[in-house]
Figure (cartoon, rainbow, N blue to C red):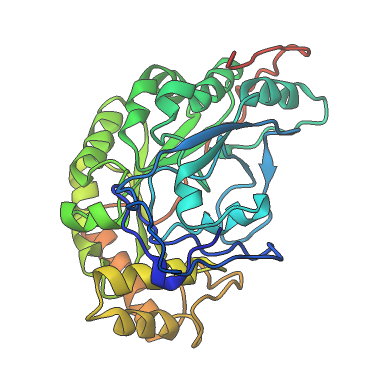
Length: 360
């Protein structure tokens, strides 16, 4: 059931306020008050975790806006609850809402390691760096129990396959042994996403992700271990967190980051509804101003899916943000780009017929 705009509930530790109907669902329903007694709405909602039995594990990307051709997403949905997450609309493909459903109905690739071993064993496979975490976070809370991401890294470490990881979780430090091994042959990049340095803003922006101080600790510890670690100031939201851009870059450099990047807020499909509800709830006095600035960077629209502009936007405000970022990186000695070239020369294809699994 999709919630009506009047039926918003602030669930403890969750980002979205409603469950807007997924765009592919033909039939919907709407709640209304008929005057009968209703049990009190719970303050929190439990997470449901389900296996997803995929036929393949590696996704291939042809977008010129992203610096990788291959990626793996161990999870569908994300418990971190980031209200701005551009992956939220993907839940519509399984007839679930990009709102609360995205945060509470999580799917995991149960056969991830076995599928990866199988695909890397194919004679037709061409080794190219794989990015893990391009959509949903590979180190969200359920990874502690399921260890899907670690199982993938174990395969990549054993086969000496290059990999980049993107996360806003501190659990990545658990896998320091594998990352250190990969780093010895120039096989790994890590990028830590830092949206804000303000703990109060973080609590409503990405409620279940690691605290800003914890993310900077991840950068420090990974960098100290010799693992190339960058920071993504992402997303930059006009009049919400963009004033922190220079401070985020400075903090990243102080923590030992080797590169930095940024992405402008994107609002595809149902996300524009979820984000506007969040603005009205948490920043009602500036909600319209924020959306006006968003439209100014998207040629008058709330989202611009075109290649070349969807990540950075266009117009004077977007150009100013770009210039500020470049100047901050120059001031602090950071390379202003997303990737470092990884070696493909050490790859050792696994023996065919591997039967690795999570055993869950």
